[in-house]
Image (cartoon, rainbow, N blue to C red; front, side, top):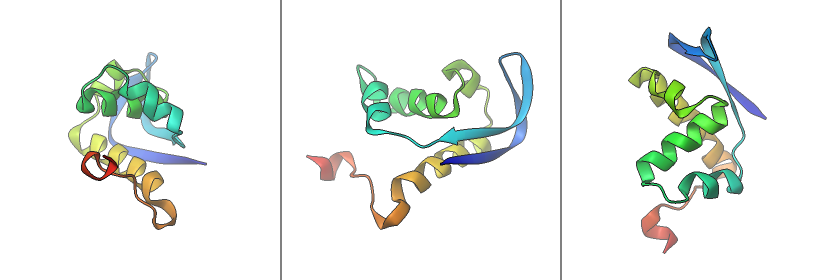
Length: 92
């Protein structure tokens, strides 16, 4: 299942101007790959770009409003069914 994200400001992806992005459902493997050797902020950025099938550099051009929409879409995956991803503090 994927989620469609309508952008408030179009961005260029692979040379094409787009006003919507599609986020695929994340897997545990996606989380592990994104976290490997990165700060939490960089890992989140790489993870979200990967799920949107864009490069991190392309993700850099998202407006802050649109990056928030992307984060919200990700959180919807993480909280479906009422289950929550553990925070770093509760995961230990």
